[in-house]
Amino acid sequence: MSGHSKWSTIKHKKAASDAKRGKVFTRLAKEITIAAREGGGDPNGNTALRLAVAKAKEANMPKDNIERSIKRGTGEIEGGELIDAIYEAYAPHSVGILIEVVTDNRNRAIADVRHAVTKYGGNMAAAGAVSWQFTRKGYISISQEVDQDELFMVAAEAGADDVQFNSDVAEIYVALESFRAVQEALEAAGYKMDESSLIYDPNSPVTLSQSESLQVMNLIEHIEDLDDVQNVYSALELSDETIAAMEAA
Image (cartoon, rainbow, N blue to C red; front, side):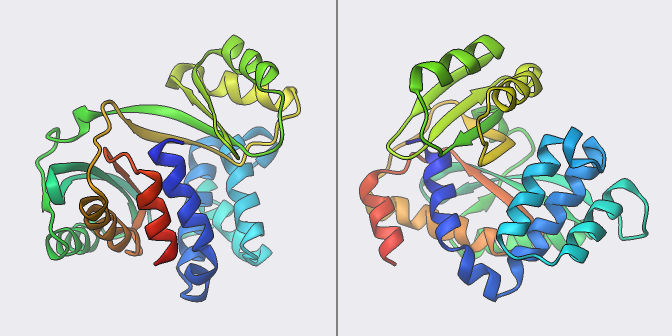
């Protein structure tokens, strides 16, 4: 299983504790607002928004909050303007990371990110120093039981670059220009997408020892706890042993 889905799985298991801290609603609201801003407020015609709303409902986010987030994205109600930003940094052991931020206060966001990065053993990087290690792609995951050959053909014929099958999830990686076509083809074929989003995929993932990997992931977890941070992407490939140690923590 790829590093992206492994870490996503861990985060999903921790969602309950995140909800208790009230942070998951803030993150979901921003995701809904951004999706509505970029693709319109109708979930039927906006796959990203439809999936964001589904995640919000799964987390028991109140309906009023969901509707307000959509209207904020479409400009129907006032709200602080949300700014998208990507910050580059190095985690311990020189592992490159990209930090995706959605904020209404850029100065606060960069100050919080810089503090967390330096506190937990990393250092900020200049623009372009890390981003070349990643490629922007569409990412889709499907956890329902599927016929692997059929899913592969549907995705590949629509333009997917890679389809990976693991014990409990199918992962589809797509070039940006084919992302919408693959989404539509999968929906038309009856597949339920658990996640469908744009990610930064590492070109050459690095492998570290378990203790070194845990140091990197400790930094990433603390960065992801920041209110303005939506996602963190790293060039680290997580081993099964490291995953087991993180889940046991």
